[in-house]
Length: 257
Ligand code: F6R
Image (cartoon, rainbow, N blue to C red):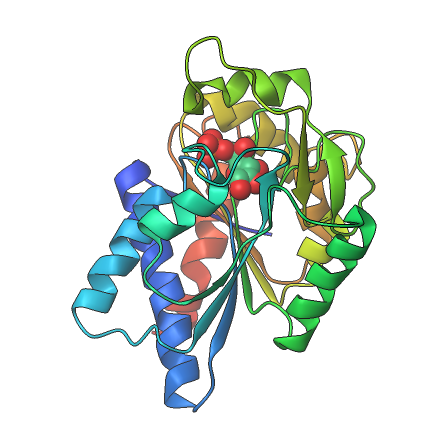
């Protein structure tokens, strides 16, 4: 895992957008498109806004395909808390595939079809992630199999409380969702996890420095050969090996010079 720390949430969005823009532009120059896995929630909004700015100044996003990481189950199509709405509002226009909040027919077949659609697109080049205060990635809550696939899941009480702000006062947060599994996520060729704010510091420290465990799904990124955690100072504040991570992050520049 590569750990990169920047001063604040604005810088997280800016650096993440530069990484995504580089990849998209590199693929475009090589005559190929880019497949992104995209997270919703508050954290990546700055990244998506910055990407819009890259597109406004010439980045070609036309050959980007994006697959949603997860979605609440049961919400009506017009509900403002739907993750699909977050993508439609903030992602630059691209070939976006969202997860239905009310899929017709058999749920297991729907989830298998979603995995097939990702495979048919050539697999995910770059998976963007946030992290829950309890260490979830996607909606893979603590206890989820590290090899899990796209499937319906129950949301934990902590996650429902943390996400209540997206719903009207007194409105119930859904109890279930569909999420790409941790195993699905680990198949992405690259992973970029963003975390901002002190509320994420304990989960980030456990994911990077704790044991690999289904009890903290983000720790599964320890198994991935090309996973980067891009953090602001507050989210990095409980890491104990900061000097080493900073030296690692600086290494490519030092080897170049
Ligand atoms: C969202 C998702 C979740 C969030 C996480 C952090 O698609 O899968 O894992 O990334 O709950 O949410 P925010 O960014 O709102 O703190």
